Image (tube, rainbow, N blue to C red; front, top):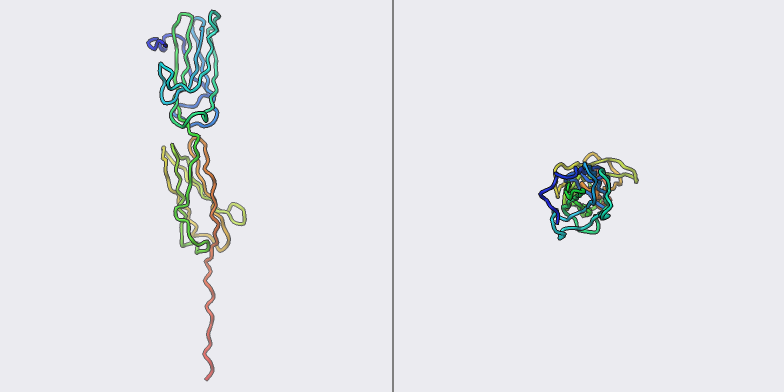
Length: 231
């Protein structure tokens, strides 16, 4: 087991880009990088990913990169990376640890916490009309988005004849797992339209885009004129 009492008294370890930022949301394959310097050569290092928390045991260990050549020393300055496919484990909070051991058997270490989210948000049209032909002032579309961690934005674009006609989006602050976005169509003229809507989360996952086709008919039917018969 590691001697945690010696943390930061041995090699000086810093975590560098492209490592995810502290508490950042990530998905897919990630690479973390650590730099270590010491006044003497280092004999081994361990770059590891942990699910939930960093521990002295290996219960939470999900992936690691290491080098321990034995009698041969690695040098007094090391730059090492470790790549991990986050899709091999469930979403959640993870910790990247970088530990370097010098020739005086003293450890130096650094930690970085981040959140893995490989799950797409889900969007629904909360008030989808039963009819597809209606007046433009008779409804506002209500798009509901949900996510397992944190939504980034919700979009509800209006298309006409296959071309983008009205760009509508809402950025979501904080770490909300649910939000509703209202799309106002009251200004639309008569014609055939499509509402295409989705959402994204802070890890970059994009919900499956959904489409609702509709027709705006603001023109009242003509009232027939009835003439009275001549006397």
